[in-house]
Length: 234
Image (cartoon, rainbow, N blue to C red; front, side):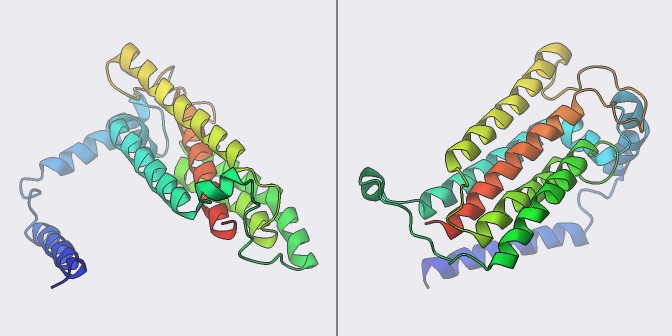
């Protein structure tokens, strides 16, 4: 039996174990976790000020988990970028990267540039309104990545800069951690909401949570755009 077969069997065994937990309703038999959900639904609008309760959970009540998700995405994008990037010998010789895909036709190139501002606006809207409606930094960041990647897809030799993308990603990730640490030192736990919750449903509400979603959206967008660009520029 090969290593791949052993890995597949271990994965299937883990999935079977999780399925068994769900079917036996363990550890939900006493209903205690249902009470936690009801408490969050009742307290989140007053404590955090979000109309979208998912935002309260992602950016306040389980902030460290969200930080872990961002770290996983960063590690995955970094590893994929290292695999797809040029070798040190090519970098040392200042060789231009080979373009894997040819440029698209005139109509597709113009269409991609026309779509760019609309996708940019849509992504920003989803991010900014993440504390009010379904959406937020991860979803809006994916739309922002598409806005920057579509022009690269139609013109692989375009002006997309991986250095700028990495710089923006680092600044956004650093901002997220700084805001989280301010909450830790000010309120006693990481990503504690800063400022007044405001009025539920208003655009300017939920304290620092919109700023966190903005940082997440920019970070996710720059990571995904840089990763996707690597697939067309090797």
